[in-house]
Length: 222
Image (cartoon, rainbow, N blue to C red):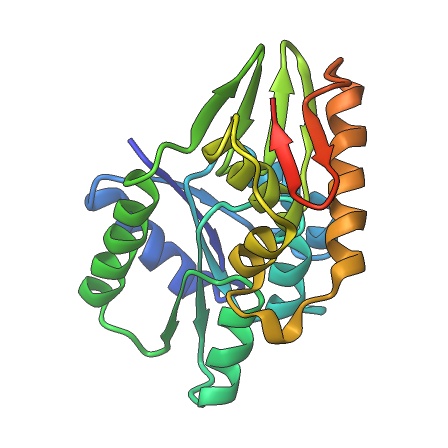
């Protein structure tokens, strides 16, 4: 059974939504304390499959919370807001939201959107293996035994791309196109920085020779 985290400060709406989702076959976790949410959000999301995140959270901005969360996790997020303009939608999607719905919404429409997002996530395995480590796509981390090392969004994408092409040299241009979808906005130094961080994090769990640089050609995951 999938678990959904509801981040909504309107108590009545939160309870109604929780009841609706439970009746629709989901487990539900509720955020009821917002004063320290920015510090506790990662812990609250550790065992959930999807997040419904209100854009207007007491004392903070839901978009900013999402942007920070996306540095370490790829758990799907649907933004819920009373705002209804294209700029808010663009901001939410650019910060990593998987979908966006505006209040007041039809609960059945929201349910369909939840199902669609979860279906997309299930089309690709969210847990992959490499040597003796595990890559958790939905949690944004690599794991070896009891050791868990978080990856940023770009680190996760780069390592995933290398893993999907394991044993094959991939050029820097290929990786950058995969990351940014266009070569117009490439920052070559950013790729170097992220690659060094990935190597350092792999070393933390004992993999010192995983990624090899081939001069003039690119990188290869051995």
